[in-house]
Length: 237
Image 1 (spheres, rainbow, N blue to C red):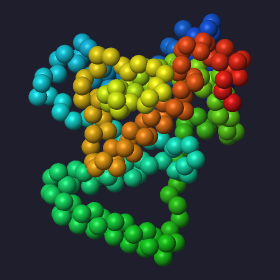
Image 2 (cartoon, rainbow, N blue to C red):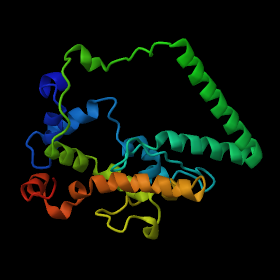
Image 3 (tube, rainbow, N blue to C red):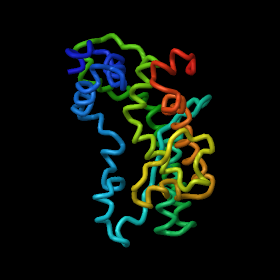
């Protein structure tokens, strides 16, 4: 579909999602037919659809944990692996206590280091990289999304960003320069998405979520008009 209808160019599809694009209805349908493009709100519909939320009993879902995959401005890498490590420590601590969890994490780290040293010693070749199925048709790498495509896609995923805004917690915990309202009607547990681990981990989690919103803030602010208007006004560099 992407190859035939959109010239194998994600930009063409992204820009077709713009509100003022005559191709929008078709593009929205095609976007929904891409099986690996399930949106965050679709994936977590049982926590945000009021019709489904009302079926959750008071003693039903008690915890909801989020591990952001975000590379903040100026950073060389994401903190995802650190979030994973902190989650492991958090779960082990709750189950076995502080001393036992620290010991298990230490043993796991020692085992990891030993395995990496053994791999270097044997000079094993890297595992084969499996390419996406689309690579069989084209070997050239398409450019990153244009600013217009990026804006149109962000607007299309507006409810996903509103859900992320909800994950930041109550009003006093949300970013002070938010450009959108949180997603109303969601289960209260959504607001506790970062309420796990120690205080440093919670701040790191909220910081990553806030970073996702800030990178798209100018695109998501509908008071600035359409994506075309934002770019014409030079709002986005």
